[in-house]
Image (cartoon, rainbow, N blue to C red; front, side, top):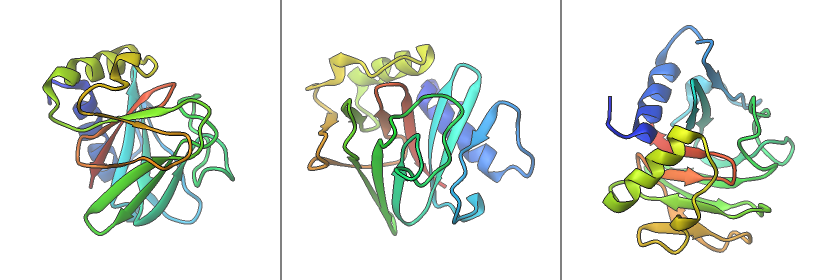
Length: 170
């Protein structure tokens, strides 16, 4: 396991997606038109003892807490706004924009040493997006209008106003 909690969440998500049996502490959020086995990437959040996984497919993935504003069934807790992010995946490329949230969100690329401890603290405490990330070097603040995008790499951390998530390829 990694020394960073968000990367541990990503490894747990990959293991869960490959498993044939569901775990009581893992929720794979369902998307009606595509089975999880066809996913090419994941967006995962580990809060306390529970892992939540959004399987992602090629094309547009509308992430949020409320269908029809989201492509997914509601997650077990309020970890997202009704409409949170649009994730675009094409081949080996992925990027994200804000989907007109009430509260802005933030993206932290992997390998930003001075921000890794902030990311880990937020995953450990299951807490909200840290204000110290806004304007920090290595952090991208996504605007409400979807005009600012961020590239997603393996291990990229995304923060909603409610929880931290990590992106990873399968």
